[in-house]
Length: 68
Image (cartoon, rainbow, N blue to C red; front, side, top):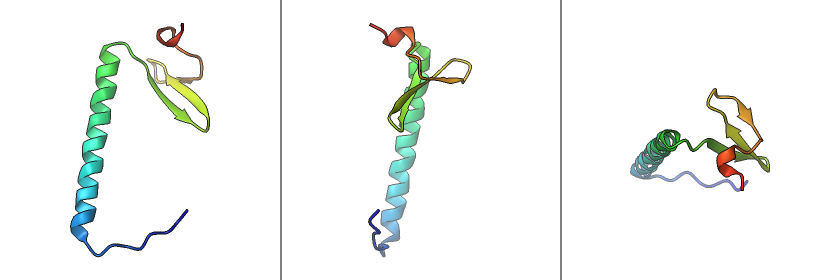
C-alpha cells in the first residue's frame, strides 16, 4: 500500500469525516428500506457472496428472491 503524506488542512479531515458520516447514514437507511421490502442483506468478501438471514445467520446459499 502506498503511504500518503499527512495534509496540513484540518478542515479537509473534518469534511472527509462528514462525508463518511453521510455515507454511513445512507447505507443504514437503504438497509432498513430493503428489509421492509423483503430484500435480504448481502455482502461480498474474499470472492464469496454472503447473505444475512432474518435471524442474523450468514449463508452463501442464494435466497429465493435472487434465484431465476
